[in-house]
Length: 246
Image 1: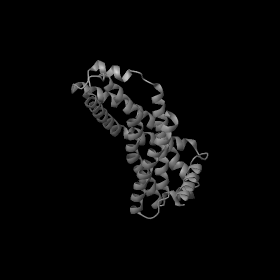
Image 2: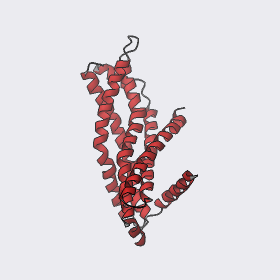
Image 3: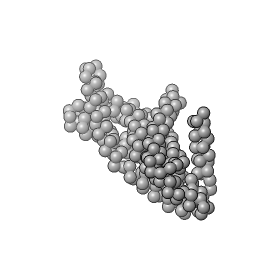
Image 4: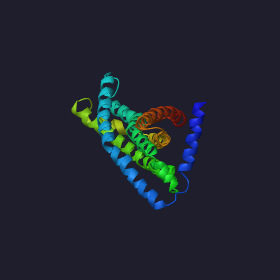
């Protein structure tokens, strides 16, 4: 029954987080800062991983399609579908759970053990709203943009390396990524991204907010944030896929 206790406490925290703010200007400033920290700060790792994974997916697809009965443009089709349906929305969000989630949990956890959160409460500030709401809103705003960029860079990396390695011709690759394209796949990927971004930030903030002890407990909270966020992402990935693609 321990999970019921944590679920209830998590629900109450989120409910309190989105209460009417004391001063919108302060929350707006935090929101802008968090967009820079969570979104722009993750741009580098998302770009590098997307380019190289797109290249690997393209080469592996070409290696698997050696039969003369399979047209060469199938390399572009498979690369596009793997990147847009699963790699960018799910794998990249798992990576962001490790980078962003641990950062959020450690930041809020440190504020808890150093009694900075208690000081905010004494000042009459809704500490959960001030610390957590801007992070959730910033992630929901920026993560979909990162995922769209990841899709583009993944396809671009597949094109550059696939053509350079002789695995596919430029015409066949471009024809493949446009062949029978379904815009609904992008909608599906973005729906997953919105849900995953909320999970990453809210679960990580929950573990950081209720940290007790010292520096060691902050590290444990950071680890728990990454683990539980990743598990929930995988779980909801199955649920969303069953609902939207069945």
